Image (tube, rainbow, N blue to C red; front, side, top):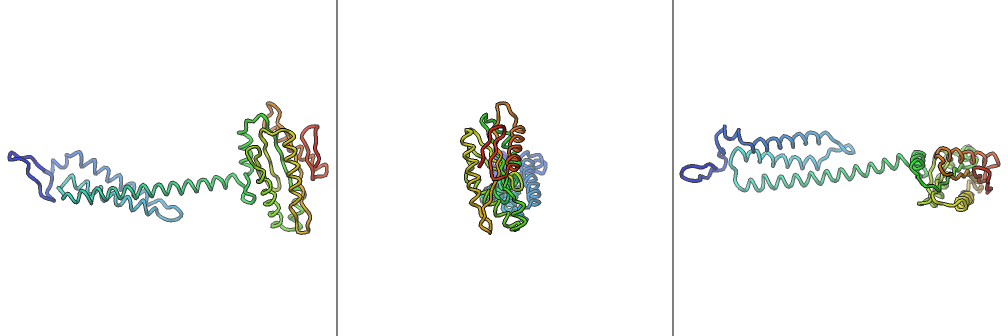
Length: 281
């Protein structure tokens, strides 16, 4: 609209809102134009993104509606428009575009978070047994601050013989079932891991020496319930160590490895404690 000496004169729909110079020096025009170009640039970038091999259709459609509303905003700074254009071609299009874009972006974020969680779980867990893997074991051991810490390293006896005689499928079955047994005892006080091949590890926090030995004996006993095709049960050797005050995690792991080695040297199917004290299963 324009002011005259006779009063306010209504401008008809489609009429310019002023002279060319007045329109070109209108701040609102450049603000709306900048926002429109920003939306177009965003649309161009979003159109280049694919998730699961598919374009982000929801976000693209939402941005197109939003851009259409932005174009009407720019025109609104140049020519007068009917009121219904402001309601439907600006407000409704803008609201619909914003809503569709926000919903689409939210769904994409949730999907990416889900994929990240799956990838993180896969990176830190063994595919066969579903137990935490060696990387998780090292991270857990490094971050543990408990002063009452124990460790077991478990080795399935004669596992190579099982693979050679019964095949790798049978070996995988043994690993899976034994991993399931360990998962059953896992909890806040006991964390179990598959650290490689037929080797497993258990980290205990806040458990007494007696409790740790009882858990180790239970692991040995339950392992014998895993039967091969000839009906023979498997056996495991376990090295157990307890961390002393001020002892490093590396030293604890080395002691546990030495106890496991001694269990194998002394006939397998047994538990050996690091140091002078020993328990035979």
